[in-house]
Image (tube, rainbow, N blue to C red):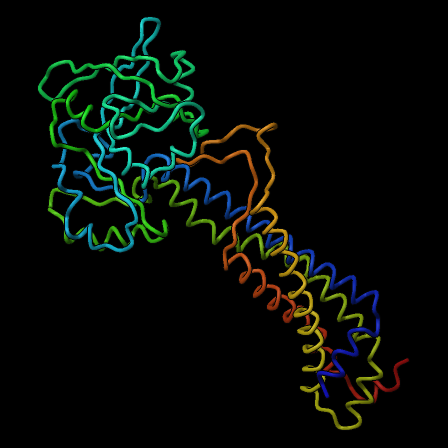
Length: 407
């Protein structure tokens, strides 16, 4: 009976109910969309840092990521450690050798960071093969093919097929140098990579540095980047003592703080937006209770308990919230799907922004995450019930005699 009464009472004043319902639907749908876009932004930032350069996990000598010591190298067979092979969460791994030096041609020279890689393995860890603007990704049978950033190619005025000379300090104290041929050009939107990074075959760089069979690190990728820290903890006890396993949070502490702060920021945004919605709900049900004061008095005079009156008003609030939530979730899901599939390209108005070690791309797109739906849904129900409690409590505390006499 209460459910029937509650549903009927909602539509006694259709205009007011529809206005409140609209406000709840709009706030829920827009909040879901906004959180989806924020999640997409953070996902892009993390991907730009880990899937273009670092990887999700890195195995190296202690503090190598801080010093980049040429002599802090590892044996090539470290990649075949049983602990790494047996870790199911690891979906890709790539051995790397790193060097810093000058890339030159007759007209100009530029300082660069050069990564020696095995192309087919590196493509499992990073995504530069999907960001080519010219040429092709180096292949295994290219002895000295190089992939360089778009900014560096522009500075040196080179195109695929052009020759460059790389000069660096070798491990035996000599000056290492050799010829590179540009295979392809990539563009990530991150000026640090586009202006300085070069990828070349690992055997070629080992020869230049006089480090045969040696590497500096193994970059790895896992199925879920948020599980990287747990995977690192599982690997560490099973690897030699002179090796450390770093997850992307260790390599990019600022990025880790940004991601960690996201949940707090999400709750703050939800709370602020729903405070305004709660005031609308409070106003609606206060007006409803005041208009029905005589009705409540008659019901109480006929024997209805105060807790039943309170429950009736709260049930009306809950019904309105459920209707609004169903419509809001549907609208939010549709808008999020649109932003996921199509998005909004802002590249004509803004340029990529580097922040916390990642790059915020000039495009808006959303991702589906359960928390972006569950948090707004749960908060809407809580705010609605809290806002409905005050008018419900007022109705339950009415004096039946005074209420019946009220016009």
